[in-house]
Length: 565
Image (tube, one colour):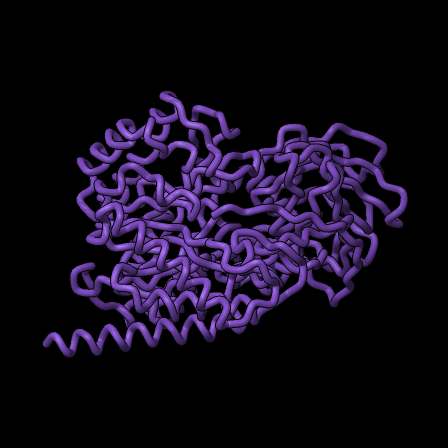
């Protein structure tokens, strides 16, 4: 899908709560991330004008370090991007919950967040657990009054992930993290968690040792709970011949290990309970710019491509729950430009072939039912590149024996030259419906009838009526006017009714078309996100409409099966 970033001016906010930070509440499902192998940097900061307590060593043994509680936080700004921005809470990085995070706006290179330790403390070590929007260069400051700041640490080659900094013990009440250079110029910075540690001997009232605090990332109990729930719901996976209609969601993660977490398993369980029968697992990969010739993944610890192990776990979980899987690799430019504008050449296709075969082999090894050979690569699917695509398709068929689909952008599907080589015709269906912000349900139904008619005419004219059509993506933001350009939030005005009406109209029309064999709602994520304007239907009016249609389609399918018997 095409996405546009909308910029908002940040605000400064202060939140004060009871003493948390190095939280007692560390049994959250997703804190498994804190247990992953850290990208630790035991770096000693250059000594600057600080109140040094001990000159013996900049690093104190973990056994002697204790977690220091935080009572308040303040941030330079907050991200308000629809569909991704977290709640504007500066205490999110110290709440002990890897489901929450702080994220700045995109405007400035120097963004900061600081924390109040409530009283004079001695600090010598912090861990910053970066989200994928990290700072390549950042500084750590301390202060007694939140006005005069002293630098104690300067990271000049940050790699994101779980970054640990050691510095000479210093007396302070406030600790600030400030970006100097962002990893991506068009992004802000974003932090899952910050843990602040100091020597027990000089922080007498500190209660939790660093060793014990980190051990609380152990999710063995939650893993056992998830496994038991999966076992209770376990059933055979229906074949595509048994149940040809696919009711699915696009399952999106931009974290290397998120799909391994118990929280992901519980999300898949909830989708199963909603009646979803197929999960589209998105695999994000990247290239530096639109005209780059090398495609790469970022599945290192702290990266933003799921690891092969994480993907395999998610596939296995879906299958245990009796759900089918569509594996759907994506390629995105790091410039945040649209993938439909990626420019293909021979070297690019060579790199793409290597990339797509890697995931075709994973699909084959894990008995994935459907594999997408590409997603919205409109700049590469015109007729001149037909033979190169045919070579890729042939090589994919050699390693993978399941069904193939190509996921075309809504502006692209009529020009894809290799549809006859596909088992399904895939469309990412972000069709504009009307030119009105306040279109009625009836007007939206009429618009969908027109779009469906165009698809059917095209199928007939190209002798493709024998090919089942999947909407490999369909979704709407929760904003006023979303029917006009569903791929982007046109306004910052929340409109749950329009999102709901758009989905309702689509299902009302499409479920009556014999060529329409399934959909994948964009999007569900392993961890719940705060997204009042975004695509998610969680907790919104559209969720009831969506679940109602899932149930209605399933009942109709069961009725048809009963008639056949």
